[in-house]
Amino acid sequence: MYGSGSQYEKIPNPVKHTAIIWWIICGICLILIFSPAIFELAAVEAGDWIFALMFFAIVFGITAFIVAIMYTKRASLTGQMLQRNNLLAYWTYTTEQWNSYAVKEHEENKREKRNMFVLISVISIVICAILALIIQDGWYIFLFVALGIIVLMAFTAWLSVWTRYRQNQKYPGDTYICADGIYFNRELHVWRGFGAILEDVAYQQDAVQPQVLITYSVLNRYNRQYVTIRVPVPRGRENEALNLVQVLRGQSSQGQIQQPPYGF
Image 1 (cartoon, rainbow, N blue to C red):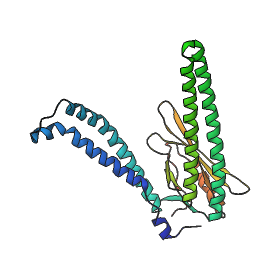
Image 2: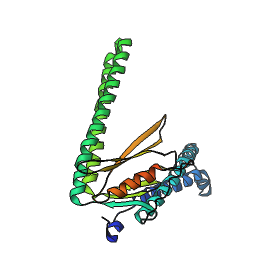
Image 3: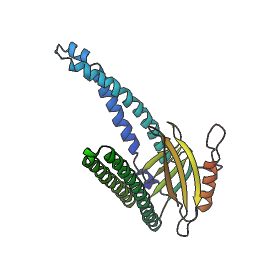
């Protein structure tokens, strides 16, 4: 079921706003880099702190410049998808279909976060218990550390689950899928560029509502972080979803995702 033109025009491009903010930060850093010269031209005496500020602006400015470029490219991709350029699929849902997905997604998200919370809590308790046995005089410190980690993880897990459920309840689902990523319910996921890799795509048959599972990975500090997106398939679009899975799976030796025989 295709959305009307007025519907998709109302969907904002939040990534563009983020890119603008980072470019503004770049401009501020650029001004701070030349702050010693600005103070000198203004005949204002500044202390040594101005050079420390300049050094900070150089270091942070380089990072801000890289992030700004990254978000500019992501904003461009999001804009193209919202204009339905080179899409592999564009899906909208009835209220009944989306509510069914939101409830199921909420339960699945709670299960995943609960399992992660239990795992991290057990690891924290074991490590702190070993340290407490080694350094017995400071056992109470490790006890508070373990409790702090558990409380922090519990709050983080709850906030993550609540935020996702609120997002699904607040907006109707709109799905834009292209060769490089997906804009799903106002969240952008990209699996090409900046170290991102499309890992797997699968079609999951369900008695209530089938789903397309898209798993990609991104570079983390020490390893790769894996993200799985569960995309509900609207009624009557099952064959299109099966074709989509085959297209995304079919990658060339250069890792380029093939374009489908259909499009928008």
